Image (tube, rainbow, N blue to C red; front, side, top):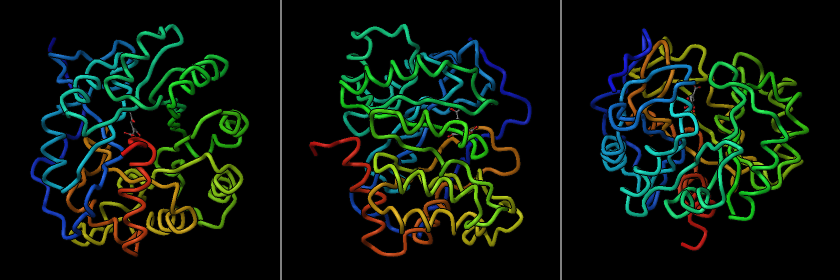
Amino acid sequence: MKFEKTKGWLDWYANPSTPNFILPKGAIDAHCHVFGPGELFPFAAERKYTPCDASKDQLFALRDHLGFDKNIIVQATCHGADNSALVDALISSHGRARGVATVKKTVTDIELEKLHAAGVRALRFNFVKRLVDFTPKDELIELANRIKQLGWHIVIYFESVDLPELWDFFTSLPTIVVVDHMGRPDVSKPIVGPEFQLFIKLMQEHENIWSKVTCPERLSINGASALDGQRNAYQDVLPFARHLVESFPKRVLWGTDWPHPNLKDHMPDDGLLVDWIPHIAQTDELQRQLLVSNPTRLYWPSA
Ligand code: 0GY
């Protein structure tokens, strides 16, 4: 089937630069997606956007170009609860990718076991209203209890203004819980302000909660305009990410977010995004934890 991209959709950066920062051996890109290709893996009827194609081969080429060893591929909302493109990418990775799937409450145990065999190790619960329709919390809790038996965890995506309302639900989840993109802080507000401090409190009080220190390009207010050849970009996001890396060194993950869905203003050069890492993780040990030991512990525990 031929799909028409959403108007104004920005394609991923075609020729990313080679990073100056040499990733530690075994580094894992812990947040990225595959889109289609639509002709092979049609986008879901309930999707809120239609992306460009971004195939497994293009993802693996980026992995090799940037110097990552492995990927964590997160089911994107444009594929709904049809995990076929994700599963195909996981199988084709020959053990070098694990997945985060989206399922409906009707998923059978056999289907979950097949996802596990392909390399899925988590479910994603998405609360971002522009991306998904509402799912009742009791359905999510039921799923969480089922996937706990498989040793999986939950990945949650939400806007920071919704954290107070979602707090009780998040803190009742029975597994490790990984928060996408630092809970999407409003980086124009102070790091010591009530909004980000609530997120810090969530992580301080609940040792099962982890955070991805990802998506400066998505969170930055002055992003594209503050670029210094992009190598010195996203200064406004930096203190938030650095604070989390230094406060919770064993519970943070990093990823490219390739192919960067829904960016409106600029598309980052993924090579330059990698060069952002040493600004948020400033020692070899913090970099090793962020890029190697934390994601390995979570996704390849027996490695
Ligand atoms: C991200 C962010 C976004 C989209 C999705 O699954 C998705 O559609 O995750 C977004 O639009 O903020 O993590 O890729």
